[in-house]
Length: 343
Ligand code: NAD
Ligand code: 89V
Image 1 (cartoon, rainbow, N blue to C red):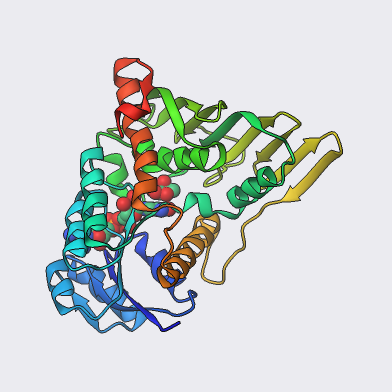
Image 2: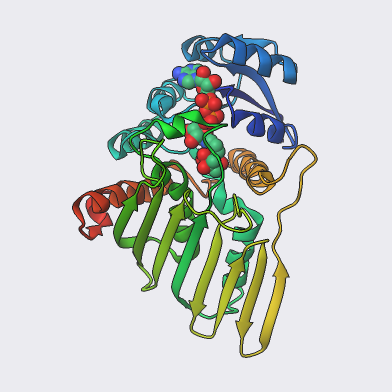
């Protein structure tokens, strides 16, 4: 396979992880950078020795010379940048959250489909080692058919220091973090038919909700709870671990704090260490997320080279994004939302 050349748009807080991970992906090289902020563009360019730097995405696309674009900007710019990629027929990765509205997300999927080029949403949490380990245990049939689940992320970690915009939006935890947890619920228990949600804002210094509890009905018949909080003060801070409980027809599974996985069935109880690797460039407690960035970027490179659809393609991620929209609608109206009405 020949080398794939990429261009990164958005040189901010999280893009550094993406750039560090790209260095470890075989046959991929980032050849150009773009950011509207000259200082961020300069700093990323110097750190990674990349000379081709653009202050505007239109100039970047006009110059060309790359096989895909990695969009690491915040949500407001996603639709315009993905549509620019479509108009130049350039495959694109777009960070979560997909878009500002489900209507925008659908338009982005349509634009890339009509251009005949792939779109992957950088929904990396399902690529975390503990989550992939839970998926493997289920696929082995160790607990039979799951009929109940809980996907829980509760923390009081200060996410606002690195990402100040998270304190400013009308929407916070479902759109930023719950989106990952809802995607994990889909990845583990399948697509969702209906949902009901309740939200709260506990931290008075932020604008959006920082606590959400969501009840999901899955197509296969399972029921699950997705509960997320940035207002939970715990004796040992669990950020950024997603804890999972699953009950199945022949056993049960518990992924508890410290990446400890317990699988119980008639043969006995297994204890598995589901810890992520600490990559040389990673730092605790972010290493779980950082490892998943490498995994999803490797997946993108493999799929692009082989012409395969990615696990979190735009079409797939519409179903996760619909759960975000549905959760806000349910929290606002108090009603149970049929997901098909959104898609
Ligand atoms: P950030 O504000 O630190 O960085 C965004 C950068 O994009 C800024 O440097 C900004 O100048 C630049 N930018 C904005 N619009 C642009 C445009 N039109 N053209 C070129 N550059 C533009 O934000 P961040 O914290 O790095 O978050 C970026 C995205 O990553 C968000 O969507 C966020 O939700 C997501 N994120 C994902 C994860 C994950 O685990 N997947 C973790 C953190 C953040
Ligand atoms: O994954 C994210 O999007 C991040 C964080 C883990 C801090 O919520 O914003």
